[in-house]
Length: 182
Image (cartoon, rainbow, N blue to C red):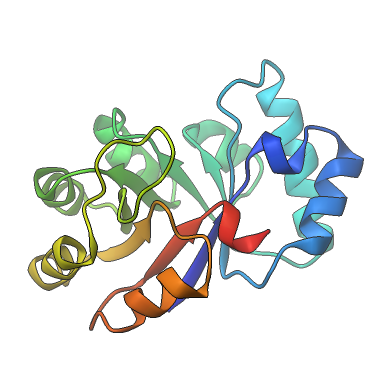
């Protein structure tokens, strides 16, 4: 099962030093997303984060919501928000691995039709300020129905307890989390 880490300024800060420290302490991951929704200097911070990852030999990093910045930084991909479906085609035209946030089967179907490589489907478990959780059974159903798109479970995955519940789902691509990797 692939492991997709998501950065958050609450845990990663916004400086080169805080990025380096957070990344040094991060548990093993296959992909990592630079995300900071409220940073007025997002591009500058993303560049610093990207440079650190490159020095560490991390290849599969994604930029949140900005196709052109992802391309400029030579990122592996971009993670689009649930309001950016219309940008999937542009992302693919720019040869970016494209992940989009999905919260319903309708979203996943749309992502698949538009050519996204992967989706995050959330929230699976209880997580602060994210509404009612979908649960493992709904995730199993999504993975079975949409077996030809990579699905990352997201939401409330904070320990091995949640990961072990996901491990029983045949065909799941992976999970994504902020707190699990800390």
